[in-house]
Image 1 (cartoon, rainbow, N blue to C red):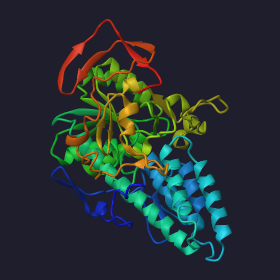
Image 2 (image 1 turned 30 degrees about the horizontal axis):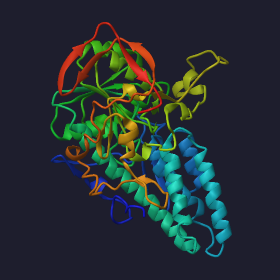
Image 3 (image 1 turned 135 degrees about the vertical axis):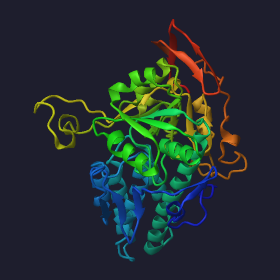
Image 4 (image 1 turned 60 degrees about the horizontal axis):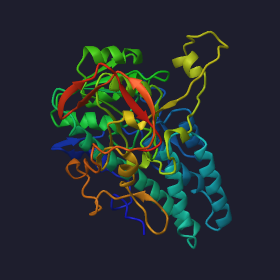
Length: 443
């Protein structure tokens, strides 16, 4: 038996527009990357930002697929929500009497959307969930299937909004007033249906009155940090400074960075995390400078079918993103280009994974599985936030699902780094002789 949805009624959520109360402050959602309006998916064309706020209405499945492929909409949770509405658009005009045609169009649409972005696991998660709506009600009529699909897409949107709010609350509890935090790429409302993942933490801490400052890396070659993160942080009034990606190390030396907090596009069972290219380098720098490194992501980003980061497919994007960013030719034509969109950060470099249920600690193979229910039906789903067996979504109940001191005994490949270990809760201990970061397939 599958758990009930996180939110009660399956309908369009207006609470995010009016504001959510978190930690004593009302946080209005000032940016909506994707929402359902008048039989269309309305998205922000993120290629135009920050110069122009342009909205596009996608009325066909192919419109949605193209928007995902061309980065008009991006960010793993936002891609999942957009694709869910895209599934409905692909079958919403099928005649009531054409059951065979409906099922054929459903499978074709799911397959088309699945090909758009291979790394973001939220995409496949949302598509599989939409398919199960139909498969779970084989006797329904076509109109009933259509209603169920639209309701399910709205539920996916609403659940993501609540998960974002819970992530913001859990992560903000890690930060003290006056902290400076570093981030990479864009993890805000432009990447989700809600306040964001890592950026929800910054916005929540700001609303709570903590005088935090965000250092945002530019995130080449598409500049999501420069174009999108800085644009969003300005809208929410969060103090922030933009730096070149190559300035991260020197910034860690010159400024006291309390933590590095990034998002994720896919998290393997052992905790290895795929995120925007450059994240792995930032994690190594954080470890070398004794700075805690956190990943913020909802449970829908966890892929229980992927045992380790070695099995995560890495999307290779167009060479023009590198040679001609923003339509400006900066490299000779015809040069050979490698343009992986993501890299994988090994789990030993990750001090915690901030989810809607709190901060998970190693071993991640155990703590990540605790996010899910495993019913007899075989359909694994994220546990509802109000599951009495797992406590509430607040950090007080779930931040210590697994003791931080737990370690695996699986043989590993050591990576030698000069490391200073640190804790937000205690004094720094410096090692000048170097330390080993164990890279293995366990978590």
